[in-house]
Image (cartoon, rainbow over all chains, first blue to last red; front, top):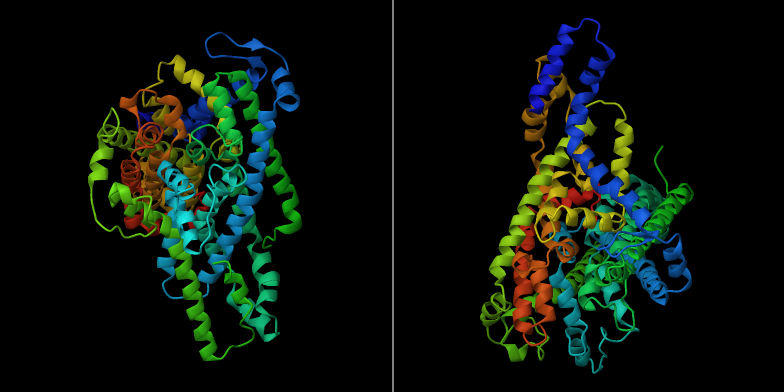
Length: 315
Length: 294
């Protein structure tokens, strides 16, 4: 169908010596818009439309069954002044982002640098380190993690070899979130691959020149590698931070959907899910979603604005 | 693993050959122990799924004392509905998602990379914006919409968005690739009177098999792994995916039958692992060139 309409557009071009405005639009713009059509429908119907609706719902009480009741800014007021669970989930998510992202990127960079020294077996190591990234988002891995860090789990059995009796890491509120941070760090494979690709771009002669000048490896790292790698660091940091904000499945599986013990794994997304699909407080959940969007937006804008002070781009 | 960066500082200046060799050995030792540490949980899971039930919680080794597939048989029929149904559902959803993403995303990418039309840059910027958008912001209205359409408890809410190129990431991936193809091809074809549709279908797509394959594989894996979508849209057990089946297992029988749970966990990872085994080059290149999240 599309092919025929494009061809009729082409033959229209041959007929009209001085094309009218309409046929010019048809010839120039129609093919592009026809190809873009599925995406456009999706963008308007599944992204922009729902975004506007969601903003509206965030100012209402809505239980899915009766029509939404306008309540002004009540949802936001309640969130910030009268909802300890909101603050608990905010604290958990921030803690997770602040610790998991830098640690994950540090591991990724350290391993990438070891792999970038022209060692034998690079493809094998790269694949092995990448495997957890690929499998890690699965429910099966979350189930495995719950077992590994249980009281009678694998970690404690290995600790017992050294005579240490470990606690149940999962059911202790002081350590439960750390098990999820470790799960995230364990998946450092994909930022590692991106770092490796970035390290390849750094010209080797820069290092040769530097070492002729007597610069130590550490100085070379600080003065050459790190500055030239900042665009990649920047990219990885943004992607991983947004992913960390959106993380849901591991916390859901490990806590059985509760966010316990004592809300210590109540990720923001998990709290939002509970409000929306546990209690059917769709208005309140929409307000939570918009606060999340604002958070991610502020973070992204802040990163881009500060990037000119620390990210080095080639001219 | 953590003593890696420290080792970089050890060698200064031009090292003697013997010292260089020592460094290289040390690096291999560090990398190998890191690999073992990272893969140990996976190997332990695999071993646990083949262990006699009474041994699962007493052993930290990755070699079972006796091999048994009892857990697989128990787990496969451990719920009211057999895992065969869950696998069929997961394959249908993932297969349709692959088709949808490859068709719709390549069409949009072709428009962005090869055609000119008004407001193209604006739409492209919008598409990039959707990459950063947390899905929670559209979640509830989408749910309301699909519910009004009577699509809840069908596969449609999980599949139809793929045919509308909702995953902008793959558009971006393909735009990057299409831009790398020589423009002369299109121009020559246009001279010969080829329509944009023919150029897309006969020239661009056949030359783009690597990127289409990358998109197809990642779509399959991500859809296979998806937990949140099925969790909110599928409520009847006969329409469950493998991931929902596993979750139900942990809620109901999981506490008593760890063997069955582990066996089904291993099985759920098999399709992803097979993709890893056969297409890891494609996957790794896909990540290296475009910076995929996982």
